[in-house]
Length: 496
Ligand code: ADP
Ligand code: MG
Image (cartoon, rainbow, N blue to C red):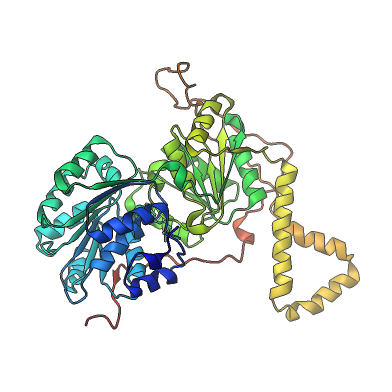
């Protein structure tokens, strides 16, 4: 384990890193930063959540000459969210060195970006299309770029940006340093390495090294039809602060978020069919704590750094171990604890074992919570809430009436009534989730035609239920994280 003070970074940079609360370098940082500082080209392969931004960001910031007002560092990222995220991280990492960082991306007012570009950012982070646009308008000049980063290269490839990237690469001086990061290494990415880089060093952090040790991993064996009730009860028992539910398809995400909403959870979904604006707004709400449960497909959640996620629920087990690692990497980040629970249909146990072979970690079996347990969970939450109010709030105005109540009623009855008001009974409102078939059994078996598209009409009926209290109404206090705002970072005492 290497400390950040041991890389030979500028003192000011080390100070900023400390301020961010990083104690030790992650494996990819440990390997990448020294090579980056030497000025060599590098290809880094590591999953999301391993700290790649600082891995390329710190050497880049170290190299920036503050007296030089040209763009010296360029980072290309696949989506607007990622561009913003990277620029925010770089802003923090360079806080004490006072480097000017700007994010440029599509879907946002170009004339404002042009004005920001005129203020001489030293690092520009952008999406391929918008960078090209600025190059063509001559509002972005790249002839002094010394460090170029391709972040999430495979994702850019999937999104069809390869030609754009090649065009941008031609605008950047040849004697630059190039760093490329990618979760996977398909051939076209390798080829970029060969054509546009100078004998790059290959750094790989294997999946098992990065399965955060702090993530507790469980599985629940459950039939498709019962999944949704199990999910609701888990949410009641565990009352996660911030949870992500992963579904296999877009339809699943839509249906799950609607169904969760019907049962009184504050949930929204994201997937690739939504407009970028919609995805952004959902993510912002989630980061600000206005949504408790985010439902997502793998693709939509890819690469996003959402901190504070306490629970990941895999409503469907992913088909490949890589996605599994990706998904659970949404939690347990930056040294925090997290929990991942994977639903497995009995026929899918083979997939579970494959995942375990990759992560080298066994998942612990978990029993689906019962209605009573779910209810107990909600009572516990209500009790905590009451305790919090008694210890932290000024109740003077309420005491006179409280004494009156106590004269007329038994104290236990009054307390029970309060609990009844606050606690949400496990909600069993019928919902509709289209059934998905289990994944085909490994090595033969179900290789039917249309594959795992659902057909059935699982209508979840309930028993004798009555409770329908909405959850949103009684979760008053909760710490709000502030979402990122502006994107042009300039410090007051900056220039010279
Ligand atoms: P990646 O690009 O690999 O997905 P990020 O760079 O987005 O990962 O980092 C994920 C999270 O971990 C961020 O919140 C980041 O601030 C945090 N982080 C990065 N490096 C460290 C570290 N050395 N110690 C603690 N937290 C870190
Ligand atoms: Mg990243």
